[in-house]
Length: 298
Image (cartoon, rainbow, N blue to C red; front, top):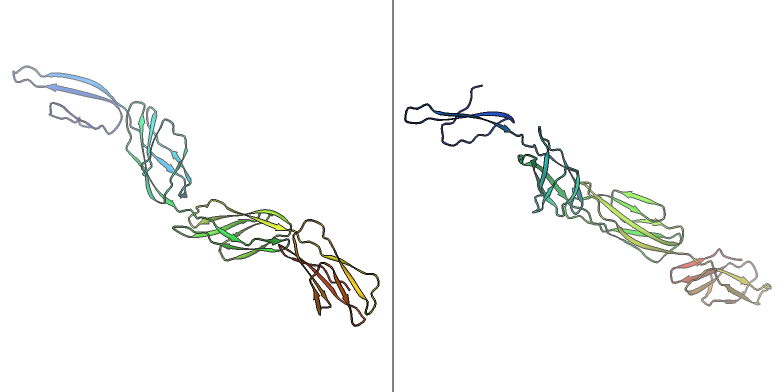
């Protein structure tokens, strides 16, 4: 390989490879004397190669994992300078992976410049990142449920860009459901208590919403029952007496139905039947939550 030369008083040179370089410098006088001549050895240190990685998907408001696979052929890298493309600059002294937040949707270019222990600076490494929108989960649910009633659930979740791909419900009673449509539906609660109904939605780009929750209170139904006077003769007035149900209930009304013909709305009832035979007596208790029916008595 032929040596390269320059004929200027000062010189600049970009070396293609690191290593020891012999630099010879000569000055030519105009008095006929021999030229001045000197040779020096210069050690050219390698520059790092910056390589940055980003986990996917990148979703607005969520963290992304930044990883470094930069390298250097000789020496060590001592500094990593990140530019996240959103006016955020971070300088680190280690290449361990870390979490960074990108809050807004859009396209970003993450830049990385590394510096070696000899002060050599890498070219800029680039990584393009698209930050996708996250869904906002929201649903409505009917209140005032009684045991074995079904809650009616209506989804009103939304997303600013893209679409919602699935809806993940946790009903708080040991049951879960994943749906790919947001049409209204029913879910039954077979035990009384307080349940946390929650929803997480996932976009078509894999971005997961924050969890939306509603508290569902399911009340027990009182058991309606009554007694009948022992002597049930034709044209006698028969007393039907309310038996208080177990538990605590806000009772708001009563309904007696005698053979589906006549009714009374008092807590206890009295009835004289005009004809002999089997009579069907149905008794209902109304609470602030619902009405309870027992099997009819004869």
